[in-house]
Length: 245
Image (cartoon, rainbow, N blue to C red; front, side, top):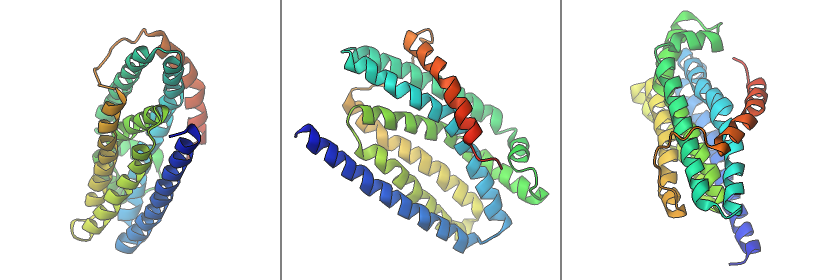
């Protein structure tokens, strides 16, 4: 297949899955409104939903923005094996940092809710904290999935990365319907499972692309140093742009 045909096909795949994701996102919002309405449960869920996404935008998104171009530069220079090594370092570092964030954040969920939405009524804030404790591990799944999306795109694999948000929305919509019986906690659990499903969807494609994850603590790798140097301004810019509670 010619390069122009490959680009056209990739564009079509991304466009279709992006449109589907937007439609499902609209369905998700409608379902949430229909099932829970303008209630304390909805407010608590939206606060808990916001926190992992903000952390992901600042940490996971910033690393992806810098890591993927570095991977591509190594690969285009004929250093594909070195590129995979560097990517293993990125994945390990991101996983460890975000695992630490999750382990520290879950016991402090109530304080995080207070920082994000200080005006919430006490009962709603307690509910938001309990939902956040369920959903906070999602920041790890979100960030790793986003890093994998970028790597797959750099290897001309576009379908599974574009499908990831669709899968997440399907899980959330299904969990909202389950919330009719099990309450808003089911939606928090379904959101977390949606993030995990989007991550797991990428793994077979990563293996086919040539990536076999082996944790690497080679944190003095020159590529990582370059990435960290580029990350700081991206993190600052992303942090300024994040919506405040």
